[in-house]
Image (cartoon, rainbow, N blue to C red; front, side):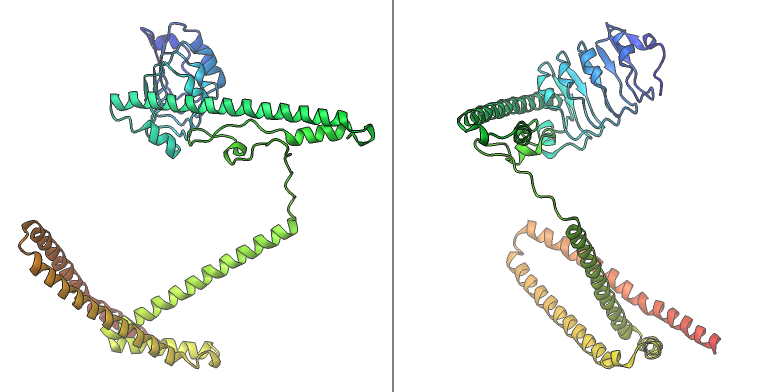
Length: 387
């Protein structure tokens, strides 16, 4: 989308207001052409990325509003905005901030709410619901990232010193060894390349950093980086296929067990509510199974149903007995603490809740026979039409 052609129409008293302009790409050059604009409002647009030239070209900015956009990350050189005092990043898609953010020592206001921030950064930034919280967010976030930046720089200098010592040690050893035992230049280059580490940073949940230092895998003195063995592709594919098959079998097993339990429970409830309808459905299902399923699978069919029914009856009886015992104990405790008015009020509210729940359950249970009678009549009508 092309921004508004004449930005001077939106400039007034040091403020350039480009909000609600459907901007996708920030017109850095056009903004730079207005040197007196120290307050920039780019809120309520569709900005996703901020170019690196933004921070390097607009270091004069004092107030910047980037709220209600779709920004996923700030440029690494964002810390060049050293004059920035007010920054609004509300309602974006930021997860972390660059390390250079610690250079914004003039920042006095920061709003980062409604962003999917990393947990540690979200805890430091706070909610920014009022002026005090936003000021505290600016102070705390800048201090935390400045501390992280110092730690990263110290770690980088330490790794450089270790690398320099290692190279000096290798050079001294090569001078002591005989010429025939000296490695070739190609081997030296390979060893040096293997011993180099990537740009490290310390992870504290504020910014995305290198995994090497984060996991404690930095280079130590007297050791070399070993290249991990290349996994066998055939074995990897085989293990991946076995995992998929195992997951599929587990899912199918769970589905079959849950379906069987649901069918058995529904049949038991139907037999309690309407035995005639249950017998009709059971006869139809039994006839279909006898026609389509081999006999050796049906040998223990009736026994299994009978055992399941008895188990459910025993379980429901035990549950009722346990409920009665629990209510008895509650009545005893009620008699003991009935002198306390506060507890008595709580108990009265609990009683009323149980009473309402019991009435609802009774009404639901009373409506079930009507429903099953209608289903029964429908099945009888279907069987009569077929005959």
